[in-house]
Picture 1 (spheres, rainbow, N blue to C red):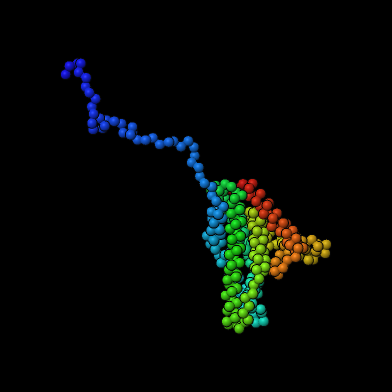
Picture 2: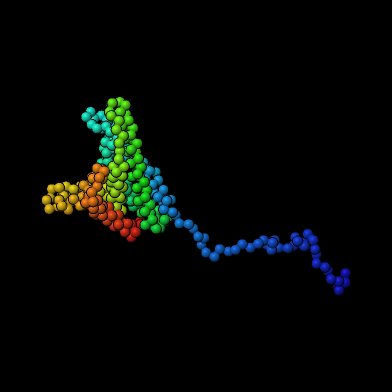
Length: 281
């Protein structure tokens, strides 16, 4: 072959095999920043908080104990010879034990991160603490609603048994005003417990404060003459009583609102403020 001979470029499969492989791959666009993520919804957080109330052994047993106490009260009423055995009487008999036990659910929900030292995990997954408090509130209110449903169901069963076994008169009358009043009483009691729990962030201290402080105030309001007028407006145990009667006057609603502001709203507000500013350890 002479020096002037020009070799033609090779064509065909041999040439294609010498072509760099990466030239045929389409380049993907680069991501210039962190990929956006959707925030956790309040419904999801509330569902998680409610599961935390029943997932632990202590929480599950406490929930079961509420049902057992309600059943025990109705069984005692069932065996009372001269007692009233109407459906409404059985439901009314559970109002006091439920109003004492249900708020402890709110206390446990409020203090769980601080007493079990799981706050770092909770607030790392959801740093918006106000949203966590709202989720705990929703989950606790759901528990109050479920406790009311359990009371209604057990009351129906025991009343039916009283009619069949004891020969009691069938009386299924139950006014919506009574049901609504009892439900409102349970929700307010639960929110009161939640407020005490958020304010103290300590389970034993919050339970003691919830059980002792309103009781001491009720005793002082009944014994000290110059506190009796104030007790009519600030004793939440007394102002919630008319809710079970089915009829509330304007003055009674004002008294309930005043006592709710002192014993429910203020502890909730202070407790929420404290959670927002507390150091998580």
